Length: 420
Image 1: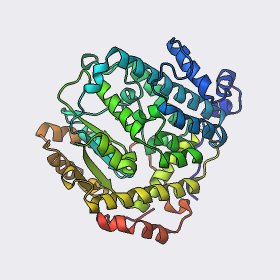
Image 2: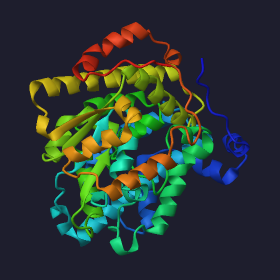
Image 3: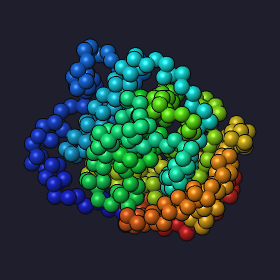
Image 4: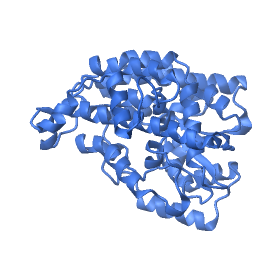
């Protein structure tokens, strides 16, 4: 088996052993809903009890599923508990700040999100690289990490970015990589990095951000059958706040999670345009499982690589099959979707980006082309270290898995890769 839990710095081992008492004392507090709500209110200096200050009660059901799962299923280390508690408190604090902001500026909900562009596709199919290139277009509005973690107050174009919020976001987003060595080689996170939509959906506690970080099977079951629309409505609200002082720029967004909820995405954003990225699912499975296993190792010592792989076979098996169904039935308007392949990006990145830009009615200008080439040169594959992974670590039959995804591969002409 090639995947092994990343090595831990000495300070991490000391914290998990309980030797750093201030962190230990805070980490050992129970992940209790009422206590977390009270602490968030105290942090902001607002009065109330229960959900006073946090808006409607729709977030309580998922929170009441998530917290017991974190306590009893996730097997968090001491440091993992501390990181998780800070994460949950930030979500509650920012939720309350957003509710307060809406009271001061109710007109923000009238902001129109016009023809947003969503990059979707399974993880490890090139969504991040494509997103980064499209973000170089001056007409694009791409959210950064600090904006999705702390959107209130609306960013000021004349003082962009808000350096204080960048620091706070950087502290949170960099923590897993400080604990789990090698994470940066798989996926880099930071306050000024472009950020996935999933972070803005977490304020409703209906988000794969939790399933990526933790083993929480009861929450996974709940999330699979829940009404995801409140998360997309909160996502839209975050975009409305972020664009309040910006004019004339089109949102370019991305997250693999959109694959799972395409009808809801289109119900909330009926004029959305979607770019789907495609890659051999067998290559995707090993790569994304390595990413999630490494991410979870920042929070827990109990990381089961094969169990994560089984989860991904089921998750993306359903989602990719549904994409075929929606495409063949005509439920996805073919004029509003565009398909690209990971292999095409590797072979000819500028040719692929030119085709996407033409489809978006934003042809690549000479200046933009130069910026894109400069970006590609500055970010070669493997620049932050090699991402080592192997399909064999999944402990599943290769041919059976290939048959599971055969219909998807045929529908979108996904060329088989040499799967490691």
